[in-house]
Amino acid sequence: MINSAAARLKESGLRVTAQRELVLNALEQIKHGTPEEILVEVHRIDSGVNLSTIYRCLETLENSKLVTHTHLGHGANTYHVVDSDPHLHLQCSKCDSVQSIPIASAAQAIKDIENYSGFKVDPNYLTLDGLCVECKQAG
Amino acid sequence: MINSAAARLKESGLRVTAQRELVLNALEQIKHGTPEEILVEVHRIDSGVNLSTIYRCLETLENSKLVTHTHLGHGANTYHVVDSDPHLHLQCSKCDSVQSIPIASAAQAIKDIENYSGFKVDPNYLTLDGLCVECKQAG
DNA sequence: CTCGTTGCAAAAGATTTGCATTATG
DNA sequence: CATAATGCAAATCTTTTGCAACGAG
Image 1: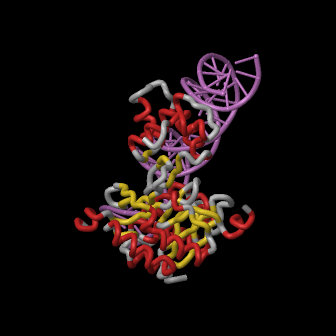
Image 2: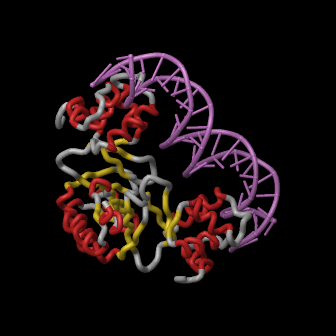
Image 3: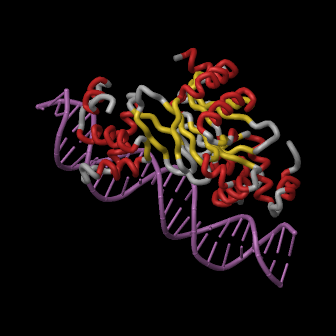
């Protein structure tokens, strides 16, 4: 837990609602997940929360930079909390497993890309496809 | 044009159909696009082609490595032809513009990430979000 | 000719929206 | 108490699938 969900909402100037706290806490539990997966986690605490509320909360939280999302693989979007230790995602195109690694491991490389392109890269959104260790060996 | 669409299909052991040629040629024209955008381009030549055929063609072509796709931004999937000069995509989160840069500029980045994680990265799928030059200056 | 491919329509899945109700500040 | 957020149901958008007709090899 970085900081209480309520505190982070307040800092961002957002209303503190039970649902938003639940979404933030759920994301901290599961690290990353689709709206559907987040709903399941939220329902462990309060089964009355609606899917469209999850979507709306995620949109609000993303606007306030409390969460971000990436497009993992071929499925639905995946959201995760923004924290002090940004990371990038590696997804295996064979088994769909997702691995997170600290952004530092690619920091210099990202600088190279920025210098080359003039682009300001947002590493929170970075997702790479490829083969994980297991599938690489198996294949 | 890298090689005639029909020739590439034949090389890959695929049946040569008008629709597949149209999809390949459309992708060469527009460089990258969603199934819907590809349909529009294909319809300039033959307005009888069905959207589901576009989806099926793309799937087939992707299986044979003639095209790949990435998840750009917040919208639908984007497909592009595979050519001899692989590139990665940079998408601006503000204006949604897409810039392609040669893979070489990220080669070291990818090596670093592979060394760190054990992952075998497929750079054809790589898309970075961030701010393009214009929006960076504007913002 | 045979079997893969296509068109069409319907189904399935994901996300968004209108509106009445509830709850925060 | 005013206004933003929520629940619910319906609408929308994207992608997939069953099936009969068509076309490549």
